[in-house]
Length: 269
View (cartoon, rainbow, N blue to C red):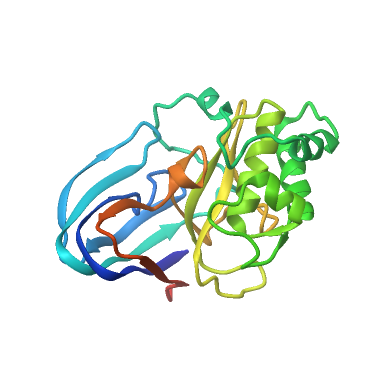
């Protein structure tokens, strides 16, 4: 499938800021499941400070914007050819060992409610089957409902609430997998449409679990599936903060307001 992406992130400030510095992970991953046909990232009025590929295989690009400024606009536009690998991250080059993803973070801390959920899943010698069961359990325990959680909601809080968004599903699945000694990590990216054909109008996130003998396998507990050709993978990390497509800081006393517009659609083939 060929997917077109248009993604604009706008930071507005109610008072002039002295400047801003950003670290962008807005570039499609290199693996057998996707091929970049065209991809452009720009920060309006910004200066690109260079780029590198980190140990997880993600491309990182630094940008700075000189002030005074009251707005920073980050634009992404491109086209990616995707293939359905049933969630398998085949052909991806990285240097971080899987065992590094057994470390918990604040959002993925294994509170008792998460330990109980993980241990309620029947034990299986087939680790891929176990990973699928964990994803199903998380999807059943957290109903998808936008607006009930926020960027700093932890996996335990979302599970206790029983509602949340894709970030909460990913954090909860990561925590449950680590309880059972399965390395797991957070993935940021895009989804063109849900399984029933409804267009997805926001950035997306899911989890990857490392299965011995197979490697990293993606699980989207929010949609009850593994990533296929409707998905574009960008970056990964221990949690949402590490895998965030945009991280940065603005200098000044202005209050920030964030607006995001995302459109992903299939091109005529």
